[in-house]
Structures are given as C-alpha cells and as structure tokens.
Image (cartoon, rainbow, N blue to C red):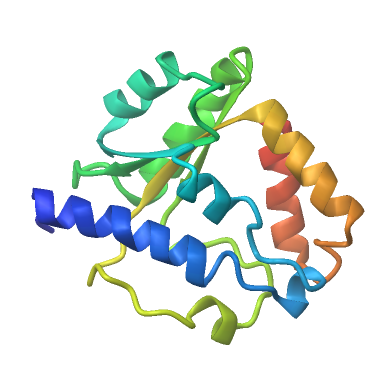
Length: 176
C-alpha cells in the first residue's frame, strides 16, 4: 500500500463521506437512529483529527490530547508491520494505563469487524474512495464515551444488536 499525500487526502475525504453517507443515515436496526449519530457532526465541526503513523503516533496523540479541541482522533497505521491482531492487542494493553488519563483506544481492523447485526445493505451502501481497506485506531475520552453509550442505551439504540456487539460495547465502556 502506498502512503503518499494523495492517499492520505483520500483517506481523510473517505472518512468524511463514510460518516455522512453511512454513519448518519437512520437505521431500523438502531431503533431509527443513525449507526453513529455523533460521527458526522464531529467531523463537520473539525472536532476529529486524522493522523497517520504507528504506535508512537498514537502515543504522541494521547500525550497531547486536548478534550476541548477534539472528540476523536483517528490514527491510520502506515507501518505495514503493525496490523490486524497486533493492533487490537496493543490497544487493549494500553487501555489500563490510558484509563487514568480518561482516554480509551479502540482498534478497527477491516478483516476483524465487530458485527452489530446491522444489515449489509445499510453498511455497504456507499462508494469508498480508497481501494484497499485500512486499519484505524480511535482515541476518545472514556468519560464522554460512557455518556454517549448511556444516552444511546436510554433511546433503545442497542435493542437489536448481537450479543457479541453488546459485549464489545460493555468492554469499550469499562476499559479496565
């Protein structure tokens, strides 16, 4: 995979399009709510930063975290030796320490998604800009993540989700 300036620009644009065209569309699966009602507003308002790098870039972003400036930082790994289960395991190993800083890491690895039970037609109803899928590490405030989860839960958001997904939601909120 080539990680030049054009590719990085395309990834940033793709994340914006994905948040608008997929994550913001109402879904019967999520009780008539969007899959992620917070994504597009945060992207549009500039409260999401997309960075590229490796573990050190994730650590740097965590050390410079500014809750007043960002709701989310996404680090797209550009070190091809850092992928798949390595990313997931590393994020989970970092979370106990980051919890003290009110931060949480969540890995997204394309070949290992956590299935909510949402229909494929809703998930895939868009045209990607980047040919190859790529992993991502999401950095968020743990307390804000918990508040958002509780808010969504109170609206019946999770009632149609799989047991696997609910376990994922519980684990991401606890991050112990």
